[in-house]
Length: 97
Image (tube, rainbow, N blue to C red; front, side, top):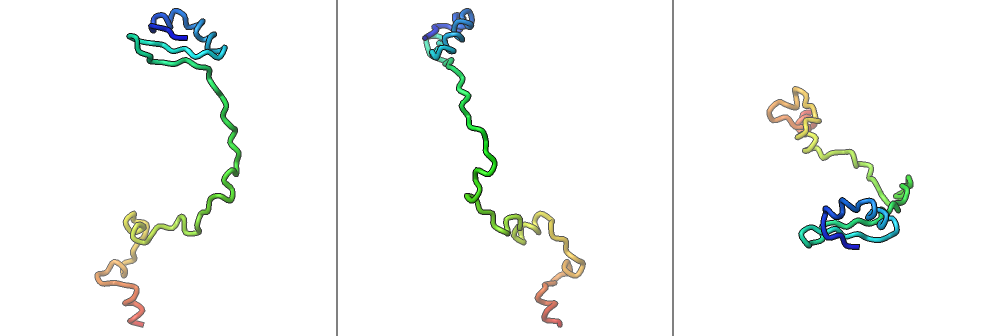
């Protein structure tokens, strides 16, 4: 069914809804151009099932571990006074022992 104006659609809304309930599609025009389609609502979605991706996704052990440079950039690494000293490196500490 085609409705030529929005005013006409407003005046016949109940009848248009009844037509849609019967499975008919209604096209509403404005200035001679189709602008809207009324059609029956289809509520055919499937219920979500927990565990649908079981065995399909693998999360590695280091998933939550950030690379050292990012931890440092986000301030997640707290340097000790010795580490913040100029020229400190854990390798230097090993050499001194």
